[in-house]
Length: 368
Image (cartoon, rainbow, N blue to C red):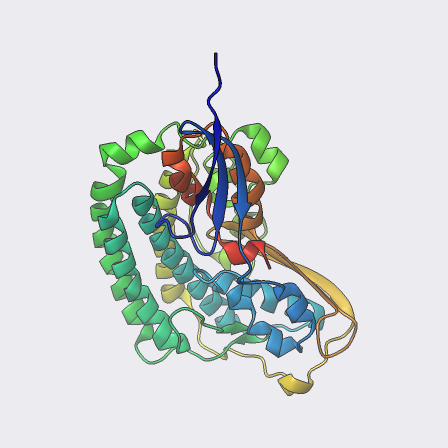
């Protein structure tokens, strides 16, 4: 059989399915990919080194830049790592508020995934609906934190401030809206025969690839492995909450979509429990002057379950006013580089964006 001449194509970052400043260099024969190379650009570089050059509270403001669509898990991971080294115990109410923030952030990111998955296959109505509805969550973030995207709300010692009056009721009202809206998402996306045909049996991640690349998050759960840091290594107050960890077994785009579909419902379930059970009290453990704050020598590793999977932060203190070493581990480094490059081999050009979105990517996590 005669091989076709190979051609190099540059996919993204202008494509509506590319999540951020990222491009994939494709070597194709006909419309079949024979090699893929991820290029993430140079927009968000050297965050780890910047953390090591700033004091403990200044470094906190960098955390939301690691992943713009979902900054809160990184803020939480950094705060908990600092608290571990310094021996800081935060108020109980602050832990509940942190869980609320993390789950609202998870919902916000899942809605963006709905948009990206729809856009990647030409279903732009899905993006218009889900991004429009996401604004209701951003309204809550703005009311609570003063910002819609970069919240900088979860910091060492607790959270910056307590709920405004009536905030809990507005959260529940928003959850009511989403529970009524989810059947419309099902009808538009998940019951769409075109999406089903384009998703089922496409972008399969094999068991060997899962082990080799250290896959986490929804791609792992879509392969039948029930793994979630919130259950496996509970933090804040997740051990006091009831929720399920959805799994599938086919390990393709469709399986990952079904996992995310159910995770949106589970986040609503968790948020309702938080509003119902949250205790009264303080939300912040008072610390010394942040600009002069020193932390005893030591190290710590904290990890959080983001919508993309495990987010980890390793911090080292030498007893000074800034981190001696900071190392960040984000799921996108695996999913959007080594794993994506493997899974795309043999795929059709038309499926590139859909596969990439289904794996979960966030370019700043890669070039941090």
